[in-house]
Amino acid sequence: MEISLNSILARMEGMYDCMPKVEKRIADYISAHTGQVPLLTVDQIAEQSGGSVATVSRFVKKLGYASLRAFKVDLARTGSAGEDELFQGIGSDDTDREVLRKTFQGNRQSLEDSLALLDPDQMIECVRNLAEKRRMVFFGIGSSGFLVRDAAMRFRFLGFQAAAYTDPAEMTFNAAVADGDTGVVAVSHSGRTTLTVEAAAMAGAQGALTVGITNYPGASLSRACRYNFYTSFPETCVRVAALSGRVAQLCIIDALYLLTARYRTPSS
Image 1 (spheres, rainbow, N blue to C red):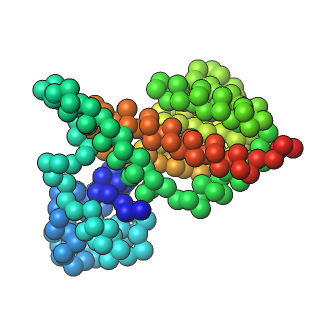
Image 2: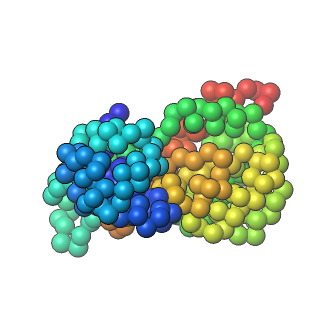
């Protein structure tokens, strides 16, 4: 499946805070010149962005590309963002029809871009391990709390001792008593929700298998979890990000649930 411009930009944005200054300049340059970058040599990109050839090469590898050429091919396929860009914020002057269109298009594009970011091999490895666990624990606060409660109910159908925790004290306690027979799924759109990150890290230290779901690859939650799956929604659309981000999070949980069911045995 082809990756979209939104997905590429969201990936850069997610890693932005963790980048050195020179890499931030490269990211800024690429974001501002998405249509021109595929036509430039590595020397030209380095010169225009204020970096070096080596830094540009390291930058694209951090994004998951084997070479600058592979990155430019993906960028060229996406085309540049324009007035018809699907990720559009909902404005107060939008008509009812425009609100409907933007809602459905935003959800659809978020799902497509999130799928493009997904590593199928990593998810399959993750669910094979989850299927062997006796207990499943889900952590989430705020809007993520509603989602993890639904997830816990689903996994109980598979025979797990599954529960969702959204209260800080309960999250801390259950993270502390997690063990090697526990699977932990932590959900945070920002990936920086302190309590969620700390609970996931604590559970992992106790031997639990930890899974993070967030919108940002460079966020703290990614470093706290063994497996990570990412949604894709640009923060330029903060007014609708919470909605479409939740749809993509739910889809990832659905995939985890359905695949775990395939590997779950009655004796597990």
